[in-house]
Amino acid sequence: MATSGAAAAAPPPVSTSLSARRRGTARAPAASSSSSGAASSARPWRRPGARARARLLRVEASSMADPVEERQPAAPAPDAPLEPQPQVRTSMWNWKGYNIRYQYAGTSGPALVLIHGFGANSDHWRKNIAALAMTFRVYAIDLIGYGYSDKPNPRELGESFYTFETWGEQLNTFCAEVVKSEAFFICNSIGGLVGLQAAVMEPQKCKGIFLLNISLRMLHISKQPWFGKPFIKSFQSLLRNTVIGKLFFNAVATPESVKNILCQCYHDTSAVTDELVQFILQPGLDPGAVDVFLEFICYSGGPLPEELLPRVKCPVLVAWGEKDPWEPVELGRAYASYETVEEFVVLPNVGHCPQDEAPDLVNPLVESFVMRHS
Image (cartoon, rainbow, N blue to C red):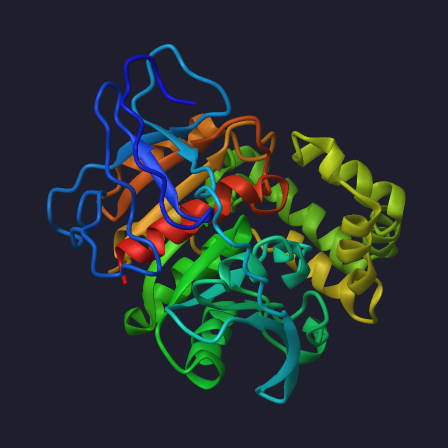
């Protein structure tokens, strides 16, 4: 889908690479895994403090009248043989005495760590792990408290445990002990805060951050009017300390409720399959899941994206499903002005979880971003 008058860029050698076009000007494709020494077509990364300007991009399913810049997934090269995707394996890692599940695939190339959002787990990346592992070493982790990782009771820990600082520490230790190298963090929703927090805590661990519909944290206490703050704290106490919280969780933790919630945040509801519902719901029925759920929905403090973005020392790409009803793209566009953000990409007709709803758009973008900075 080229704009009128645009010269077609030559297709890259594999279908998971990306070609980009400027309106009226052909643009060379990004370097592929087979030619890592090729020059990148993207603006080079500039460290914080340099005068960087984010470029607003738009991935379109059909042509636009006057786009700032348009990207489209490249067609496979003619007669290119189809390589089998690497096998995805599952393992457990012990962190501070807790069992942490992760999935992995791929044996060579830069390392990617995929970080899920609230209520999800590494299965939410099932359409991305094997595809990206054709070129990279890919890991997808279940944050502590989620998926099939342990869910310690926050009441028994005596202090705030389920915070972005905890998850950031978990992610950095995972890179040190399992990945055994620096890595790119590929994050969705709340996972974006985890990736940013980890990069701030230990900058040497992170090569770059790819944010998909990062949570704006609109329920953060600092974003509430002064007169509403006492009511928020009272409501949080009610959920935590009375039977109301567990009743609320029980109402949410059913196949029907999970499907309804997913249909709200997915623009293409055909992607909300029974398999997806079970991937999300099943680990949420584990003992301890209710306490983690209530602890997090009552977590209205901690960092905001706008506080963390200026502090990271690595390149950041922000991609946003334009049909996200929870995190409106109009508010997300503000992140394009941050010096650390090299690109802001709008994904058309996609909701809050683009990696699952539109992997054909997300996987090439991830590959292009990683290859530029490897």
